[in-house]
Figure (tube, rainbow, N blue to C red):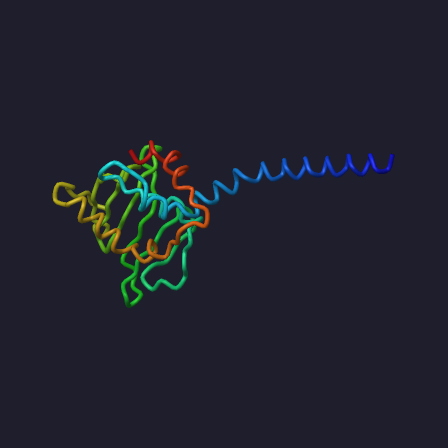
Length: 182
């Protein structure tokens, strides 16, 4: 009788451990996708003009690797996460952050006195002069590709600091984010 009770308890413990493991898997997958999102975004198919790397960089700033020793980059996690950019002397040049536009997520980049707002697919919506009370500027006077090159140049050290995942779930990332990037 005692042996039957022990066998029953072992079987019950095995089932409980199995259920615990199954319930932890979605959390591990979610953590993997978020913490490695910049790496995955560099290798995902996307529509021309959409910037998955920049989108994942700022959207998952709290989950990705954010080294403190980057001299030209800092972070602000109060409110909306922001990547702060500095010159070599430590003077702040600007930032990259999210913002809400009519209830839809968008992105904002300010560099020195010029600011740019992008929609949720990282397409240029507006330009403004941040030194003159956010005075609107005509976006026809700006080349969207040049602005994006400036953004990449300012955040490239953070992109370069990301590493390849131990367990590569690129296939799952591509499925999850396909509609967002295309």
